[in-house]
Image 1 (cartoon, rainbow, N blue to C red):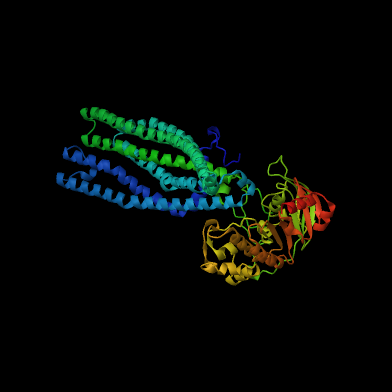
Image 2 (image 1 turned 60 degrees about the vertical axis):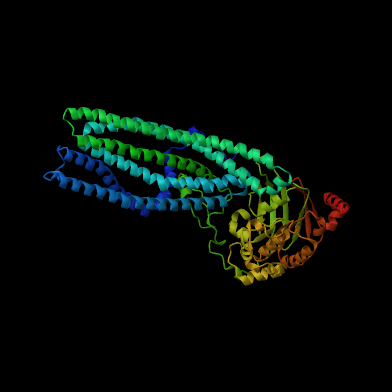
Length: 633
């Protein structure tokens, strides 16, 4: 089980402080945007602390009790007017600054969240295919969406908000101590058990929230699997069975969420009861002091309001603490994903290193690089339309062993050379390792033992961008992105429309494209569902042709084409294969008679090689497969 799918035991979870340090590089990057929200805390907190004092002074003024220095010598009406003016001023300060501060904080939070999401996406797309073999897509989507959004709450409503609440509590505490120390100590003493209860309940909330998010990942994975395989679901009448499975996972998620609701509600209920107990304690002690003439009614009224104001930030603190705990849960889960090492790395010095802030914060002084591609020499690639046709390349597999699992090899002792310009076909029963050879050559996986050389250079010593720029792969099922036809041929690289049209003409697919409603600007739906399988495959040929690769790889590339279209493509292929090294995987052996050499695989080993006629005369595995297909035909 990978680090992403494994849940972290409570004993091994990191402290809030260590998790906060993971976020610090993102916070530091926005430090210029954060100074103003923190400065605004001062007038907001002072205005909040001043209001109970002003109300208490008004009561003292009405009852003719001793008042503060700024009211001495004023008449009752004049003093009340002055106090009302001050009270309105504090209200105006809070109305003017509170919303502004909230806006500034949330804006910074959204920027931080966007930066984390960008770095996470960049990291995920740099991971090797081995990672995606073991990780459900739904879990990754939950990481990139729900978890990152929860993390955003830490910044937009949590981190600065908690600092604001703590600052307000501090200002109120100092004000109370100056006003009447006995009542102040009474209220501050009651904060100790309340704080302990909040921390306890929030720790329980954190554990429950982690489990809830794991169940949400399972729910999303189940949903994604059913939507992707909807054809199979409906054809084989699995709707009811899959609905029951989804309902079971959904119920597990609901039960996990119920626990988070319980602990969140427990905090709120505890604070309500303690706040009422605090007011009762103030009334009791304050009443005793009033009867002893040690306290005025105005000061008592101020402390009753202080008891409410003191616990209001604590309530908000508890609410924000819930958001922060949910965010720290997301930090744990996102850290799981960031901690997955980029298995396939470029050689040092071949790329410009770009360390995401998270990777730096998560490491201990030796961050794993997440390089961003340039040209093979570290310079930007030349414009695509100006690239010359590359020369054919030599490919050599030198004693290659490979397994998707460390103890199960699917390729063994592979040792062969494909000469420049040679057309080689890979043949063998299902599971013989033909597609695995292609994946290793493209370096979607690294070999377990041995080496693969391209023009005498190990592909591990080539930047991945340079390696894949030198080859084009046409798979049996051409994948199309949502967008227009032109962008599905260029795939984000800079080619002119003339270059796209030329590639389409060279592969005989220009007629198909021009027959579409808007030609090259025709919008395609997700996965190209508004095109037939054959039409999608034709675009894959144009996608390969425009790149002028030195190596062309065909993996059952004509399997989805009808007879007429296949004849059209075969003509284009003859031109496309000129001066290029080609590797062809074909189950229909009649289509590879004219290749230079055929490599026959069985259970991951090379058992035969030679021309079509030579292998037939040899009477081995290839001859058996060919005769069997001829009998079926």
